[in-house]
Length: 133
Image (cartoon, rainbow, N blue to C red; front, side, top):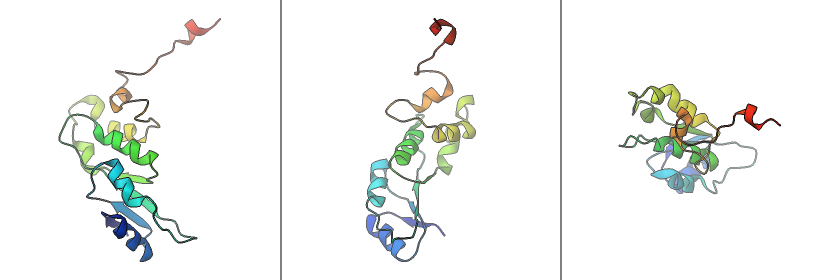
């Protein structure tokens, strides 16, 4: 059973009632979602899986990928991104599989952008033949 929560009180109440999977939904941004689970009171011997519900934004940017990276870095165990997978779709590098690969990447918003995952844009390249001495 997945329990949807929208506040810290709801999250703690769900855990007190025995929920082992909670989904933070209806909260804007990664910071807002993190505030809901920050300091979650989990009884000793229990584990609680936290899910961040990421909705599609009304633009062509891949902000959902960045939000997934931030949520991962803040300690969420999972992201729910069904709406965001079909937002673009017309660009060959932005099909649902590419979006999932971008979200699963070990990248960070500090060092990369989701667009760089397509192989175009930012990022360093090395040619080992030129580096050899």
